[in-house]
Length: 137
Ligand code: IDP
Ligand code: MG
Image 1 (tube, rainbow, N blue to C red):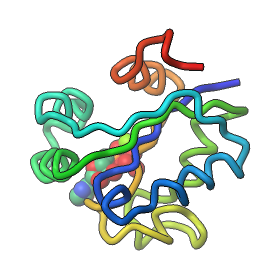
Image 2 (image 1 turned 135 degrees about the vertical axis):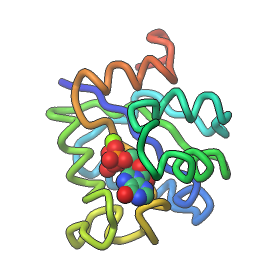
Image 3 (image 1 turned 120 degrees about the vertical axis):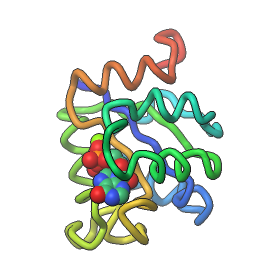
C-alpha cells in the first residue's frame, strides 16, 4: 500500500468537479484517507511548489493556486502515486490521454484541475506539508 497527495486546484473546485474527481479516485481503488478544503496562502503555495521557483511559470502558478479554494486529499492504494498520475493525465491538457481528468476537465496548462505527487518520496513530503499523521486514517 502506498499514499499520495492530491490537490483539486481552484478551477476544479470553482467548476464544482470535486465529487466527479473524487469518484474517479475511488473507482480506481484509491481510498480517501484525509481530505480538506482550504485556500492556500501565498507563502504556503510558494513553499509547496519551491521545486519550480526558478521556472518562468512560477509566478503564474502561485497566483493561480491562491486564486480560490482547493481540495486536498491523501489517497491510499496499490501503486497510488502512479495510479493517481495516470488518472490525472499529462500536465498539458492538450497532451493528456482521453478519459483522464485533465483531458476531460482542464482548460489550460495553468488551470489543469489537479495536482498529484510524482514520486513516493515527494508524496511523503507533500502529505506531511498539509496533514498531521494522526489525521490520516
Ligand atoms: P505536474 O502538475 O503534472 O506534476 P509540474 O511539471 O510538476 O507538472 O508543474 C507543476 C504545475 O506548474 C503544473 O501542473 C502546471 O500547472 C504548471 N506548469 C508546468 N509547466 C508549465 C508551463 O510550461 N507553463 C505554465 N504552467 C506550467
Ligand atoms: Mg509536479
